[in-house]
Length: 452
Image 1 (cartoon, rainbow, N blue to C red):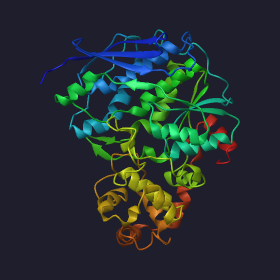
Image 2 (spheres, one colour):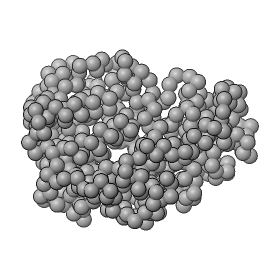
Image 3 (cartoon, one colour):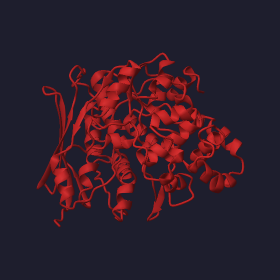
Image 4 (cartoon, rainbow, N blue to C red):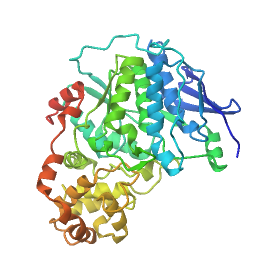
C-alpha cells in the first residue's frame, strides 16, 4: 500500500461560462482529484457577489472529506485560502466528528489526526462577511429548502406554505423520485449535479479507506453558495431534534451517524456562516424543536405524498438507477423505523399500501427492531430516531386493527412494553416542541405556521 504524507486543498474555481464549480485536491501533489458541481441552466449566477469566495472556500473544505479519507494523511495543506484559529477549530471539529462513523468502522484512532493549519491569527483575509448581518428581528422571505424527499423535508415544505415566505426546493443530484415529488408539491426545484473524481472509486477498489462522510455539511455550504448566486436570503434544513442522539462510543467519543445534522453541528455551521462567510443568508432549521414522532403526525395530514414520498436511502446510493422499482426496500433500519412512526398515526391498510406489505408481520426484522428499541447492540447507523421514539410509536399502534397481534407487536408487548414506566407521559413529551432549540427566525416561521 502506498503512503501519503499530505492532503492538499489545491484550488477551487467558479466557471461561469460552463456553469460549474471545480474543486481540486491532491495527495502529496501526485494523486490529483477534481470534483465538479454542475449548476443548472436558468439559475441566476451573481458571480461577483463579494461573499462568494468565502462560501466557495467553505464548500472546497467540506468537499475534501470524501478524498481525505482515502489515506487520512496527518498533514493538511491549504493552497486555496487561509484560516484563522477559529476557522481551523471549526474544520477540526467537523472532520473529527463528521468522520466518526468512518473512523469507527475502519478502526482508526482519530486522536490528534485532524489538524487544519492556522495561517492568520485574526479574522483572516477574504474569509469573513463583507456585509453586516441583518436585523435580529428580521425573517428571511426567499427561501432555499434542501429537499430529501422524506417526511421531514415534506413537513418543512408544508409548514412554510403557511408563512409569508416563498420557497424553492433544492436537491443535490437529480433523481426521478425527487422530480415526481416536486411536481406533486407544485414547487420549483433547483438540482445541481455533483461528479466525484473517478480516481476516488479506483482508489477504493485498490484498498483505500472508505466510509461515511458528513454530507449534510457539504450540502449546507453548497446551499449557501447557491443562495448567494441566485439571491435567496435563507436556507431551511429539516433535521429533527433526535438526530442529536448518538449511536455508540468509540475511543472516548460519541459516534453519531447523523453528526452533521445535530444541534451542535447546526449551531457551529450557523456561526461559521455568519462570522466567516456572509450576514445576508440565514441558516435555519424548521423542525429542530420537533421529535420524529411529532413530524410523522404532521406528515400524516398530507395523503397526497403517501404514494411518492420516500426516506429509504437505498434509492440514493450512487450505484442506484432511476428505474429502481419501489420507494421503500422494506428491509433497512430506515424503512422499519418509518413504518412504525406511520403506524402510530395511520390505519394499517394505508401504511401497508405505502410500504407494499405489513412490516410488523416480518419476523426477519426482529433484530432490527430490537436495536431500534435499544434492547440489543446500538442504534443502527442510519437516520433513525431514539429508542423512546420507536417504543412510543409501537405503543400508539399496539391496539389498532392490523397491527395488534402481529409478530413485531407481540415482540414489543413481550420485551419492550414492560420497561415503559409512563408511556402516556413519554408520548406527551415527544409531541411537545422544545422551543429552545429553534433559532429566532425559525421560531417566527413556526409561529406563523401554527406549530409554536
